[in-house]
Length: 126
Image (cartoon, rainbow, N blue to C red):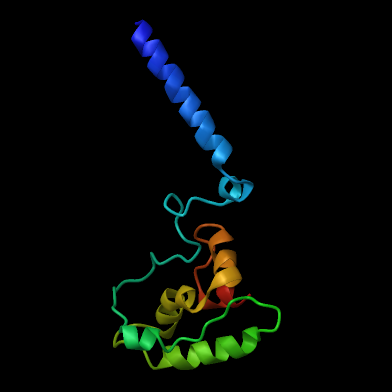
């Protein structure tokens, strides 16, 4: 029994050390492995594959001060209009691909939105 108490005490010390090593950002950032994304894909009836060559054509929006969001959205829609597989709606393609066009601060913003809060393209644009 004494051996168990010593090992549990050591375990508690290790846990406390791990907790102290975490930064405030680590503690306040959501665990993306545990949360579902803000974009709801459950209404998609068909799975589809996008070619990597088309994905590389997507414009990138980082959320920086000098970037033009409206220009990004126009370019995004132009590229997405050329990648729509047969039987898939424009909205399904845009919702599925949108997160791939974001980076840095803009990507952080997307991951902080409530789970399942984006169900249509119009909601995403707001």
